[in-house]
Length: 503
Image (cartoon, rainbow, N blue to C red; front, side, top):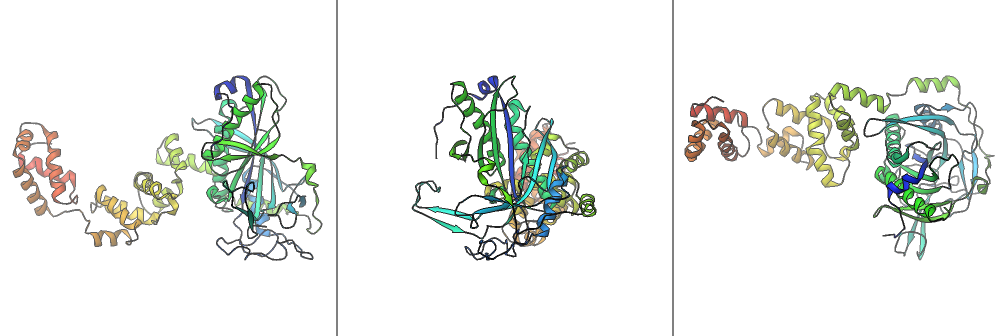
């Protein structure tokens, strides 16, 4: 869908206006059961197969809080440097929509489980920007609506809608920032960096896979502009359910340009939700944004308050893993790589596979080489994440070991990786089946070298005359004759020996 919207240039927008952002990130927790009932959260079930009277909101059913969901919420709050409430409770957020079977969402309103935190994020040039956290609260997800018969997949223009309540009741944590001020022209970059760092924190805690492409983590981008030099916030728009890091940045950038275009012509910004369009990076109007009072919040009468014991909270704090930014800085120093290199590995999703490959015995430089080279290329071709490839860090480490032992050269190693990815077995099995070992028989190599010299006398004469660089052509001939299974360095040594030339 292509949308035509009047925009001003990004530079002109920033020349007149200061952007203020607020980011609301929903994280789907990886619990085995739903937040308030015992229904499974496993993916792939038939529509409406994982439901019960509680998550369908049937009369007489009563909810029970998922203890693991509460624990996960506390872990997230602690990792985000939040205060953990000594006492909090759930509330009913009332609104009617078909994918909310109870006609209300069980959430938290004025008493969240975690509040007043912050997350430091590192931008691409190394600058660290602090994003302050307003709150992190527990709630439940809605069901899934599928609108059929229209051109856009949205309800407008559809002939009918299908509802699947398997997702209704899955635990969510909503993390809300305080207004993000002072980012200026870097506001879109800050938004992207914050969501990226938050995703890494969530993954490190083991509470969610945080796969944005699968809806396990999604971001609402709130944005407003105010004239430069003023303090009062402008009217905000809220771009809903943005599901990739690149899209978070694009949505913020587009809204800055759109708001500036409206304001510069004397127009008024409407407080509304907006839809983001991946194809062209634009947003379009959704609905007028409700205020909190429109939801008629009131305390959930069927759930007791949550009062986590201080001892339990401190136990969870002590058990937190090393935070991602601290870990990355440690690894960067250990590996001797630049900030840019580490950012590239992070963007590729390669840090954890590289660490696991090193743990399996590979040198750090070799682990980085294969994951950021051949394997990144394969993942890109297949449209997969690195950790979805059909190869394990231990198998990559084995390939590196075979190269180090001289049994494979880089060309053969790439063929071995190709075989492993194709399901032909582990590296040693692929080597055996494909006959890929380096030719190490000196007699066979010598014969191949002599044959190459005999067939290329003009080149041999150049080498004898002192043009050692010309040996590359003879090396190539030998590699071709051995199907790439010779050690190129050893081949060159033999060529120069036969021709009586010092390397």
